[in-house]
Length: 178
Image 1 (tube, one colour):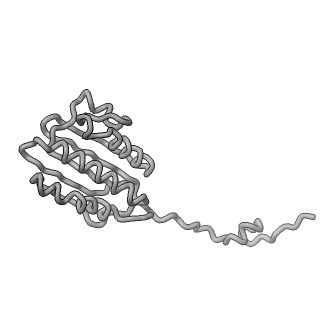
Image 2 (image 1 turned 135 degrees about the vertical axis):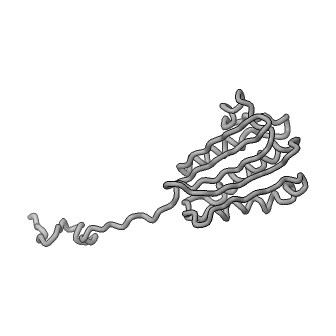
Image 3 (image 1 turned 60 degrees about the horizontal axis):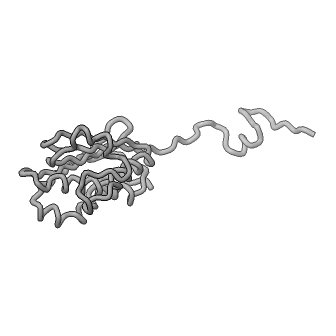
């Protein structure tokens, strides 16, 4: 389905609003207007946002400054969004494994290790890219880039489908083989 991504980005925050307020997290939205739509599975993209935000909230649980920023912008042929936090950050030695199935840094019972793996799979299914920048003690930024939707180009050739079917080109007459 072709959809404006701004509505997809904000909907999961309705679910997490109580948790965000309870944990005194500053929430910043920086959403450009006029972003082109993307062709996507809405539920899957909401799952991506929900997972990234949930991870960010968990990473900030012991941070003195708790700030979650959501940005949306476009460049070239891509629509991009990022979710950044001021949490613990991801250690350099752990970062290569964060998208692996069943990998988690959370204590037993707190994480399954399928969240970021699923996020990467969904991004790939949408022909997109995901990037992670992180610094221990400062926070993490996940950026997702998805191809912007553009209308399929219509055939500008002067022939219609019937002429093409019968092998007509310009003003030529159909040939008949016996």
